[in-house]
Length: 73
Image 1 (spheres, one colour):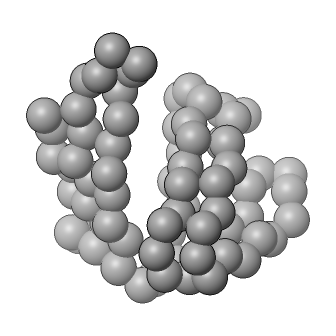
Image 2 (spheres, one colour; image 1 turned 45 degrees about the vertical axis):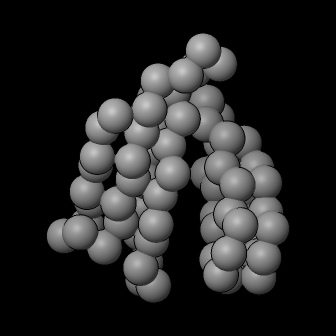
């Protein structure tokens, strides 16, 4: 199990290797953050509200359940 902390502790995740691949659970304190990835990631937002803009895409707003896939650019 691996713990990651970003943006001075305002974004944190706990990751684990599973048979299906690497999985993480994260918490994000309210704020504005920019993330990048080197591989495809699936994100499920299960609580709270979030405004998201993917590279080359439009803004999306979620107040509950949002599931999306981010592709490495």
